[in-house]
Length: 611
Ligand code: G6P
Image (cartoon, rainbow, N blue to C red; front, side, top):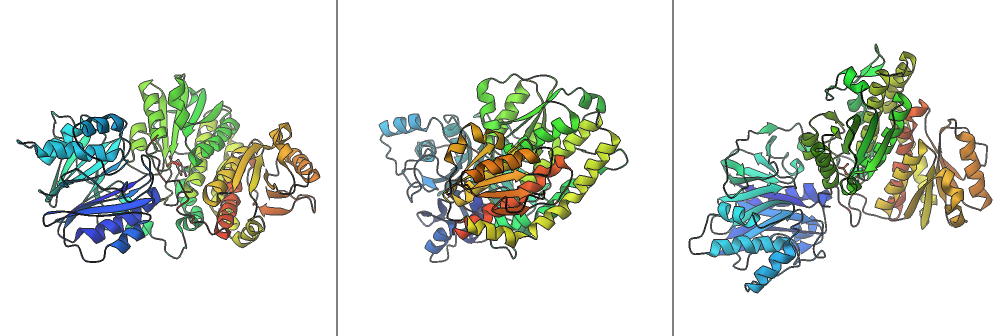
């Protein structure tokens, strides 16, 4: 959510900044801007709209070898040129970019206004630029570092910031509290970003700032310290990231969603690699540091996540209950800390997050740790805040996910939770034979996902037939219910077609009233013990002239449904993983048919690092 890039080095900064913003655009894309020093002032170029619009505004070469830049997802103030970052103090000396939310900005704004400061934007960020600027305008002016520290001591909220001083353009001051900041270490040049995606083209050597830390970054060195006014130094060594620029390139794909959908067979194979043990018919999850005795002591499992990670958690809860026969459920992480949750000693809590940054999920994990809960993380991004907060868990190994609509991360999360269910089951009553059956089923998944993807054109044709629909139901029973929820979520987020998910069994208790020949229903129909119930639901919909699209691996009676999206057979417990894939393609092609900007759905952002 919002992207930050900073550079101090030996090359012209502007092209590096704009290229970095382009890599971060999936985090926010309603306005963009940059600031560099120039003779007698700061050059600020900013605009509402995409990074490409910013690029178009840069008409000449800008020689400055230092600068800061930002791509925005609006929180305070609508997307506009004035609200775009960077923001300046009144003297035009300080430029600042910010991710996060300054919660007491109204109070700061009122105090500053009373002191005669006039504001150029409606953002929460601008108050911080003025605070720093006023401190630096004092007679015995502090250094930029001291001024940032003093100004931040008056700020409540979350931030990742980078600050540039026109009069001392040999360094940047960077600080973090709740919004990620990473430094990239080059040779005679340094980079700052909110996400390694902006850095890997230049360097693999990075330093992650932790919450409550500040860094002074020069072209050939950096110093980290605590944020307190009475600061103490913090020694941090660079780590090497295992990512290269190609991981963030489209290659031959038209957009990242399509690229990532098609990466699923390899991403899944990576998640399974080395983790299935045929001999003992179980899973080997090296990141979970728990002895069999401790695993056996778990009485309940609770998954916490947001958006698609929450739906993957629902799939996981079903898997854990079936395989391990322990009560399990999933809850939106965004609600958790506000209901004063009862934290039980023998419950295993599992935080689910692709990015490892989602603030709601991080806050739920922190609440759990504070209350002494047993916590694991199931996370894609190594080194991310949630991964570090949890300390142990399962990495998804899905590779970078850039598309706002999550696909391969959801598949790898659900598959990782199937392995967790298998492990918990095999220290309890899941037999060797059933364990072997699940191990073999998991092994077949990558190939079967590839089989589904090979039918993409058939799914695209079905999607095209329903592209002028204004509203759809997605229904499923038990294992099919989270599949329906995720399918509806995918459709609405990228196509803007209204989609509502229901348990198929609940349809007759209310929503059936909406069924007519303008309201199609997508129904998840595995060939399992509930097949006849699902056929009954289809009949009820047909009797009211509703069109039905079935996602199925069953042989349905001829002419029963209007369209079928086919899925190969595996073990019924693993069905949710496979049944989700055609619905990704369905949403994708329906949105494409409507001409939507698939990687940049309106009003959304990839990593939501604010509440
Ligand atoms: C945002 C994204 C969703 C994503 C959710 C959770 O809302 O738009 O696609 O599922 O965040 O993200 P996480 O990185 O925590 O899995």
